[in-house]
Image (cartoon, rainbow, N blue to C red):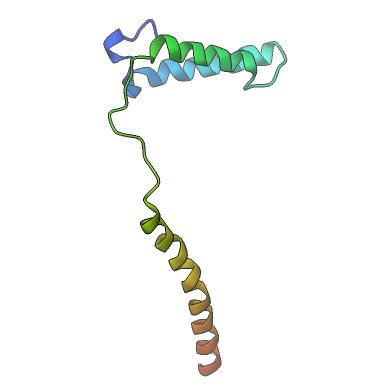
Length: 101
């Protein structure tokens, strides 16, 4: 992160490479110390890094929320109701039609 200007700390394009290097470094140290990754020490270091570098970052877009229940229910129920109907159509069509070769 030392090579990234402070004004670009919240831009993923600017921090993706240092972030990947941090992950790679933590994985290498875990291998050298013969411990699994992720581990508590690595997670604590990542949390520390987030608090240090990204605490003033705000999201440009609001977080995605679940749709309201009056929209969600039809989206769930429609495919469930369609499945038996489509199975019935396939069965009826296979009984009426001749075998194709």
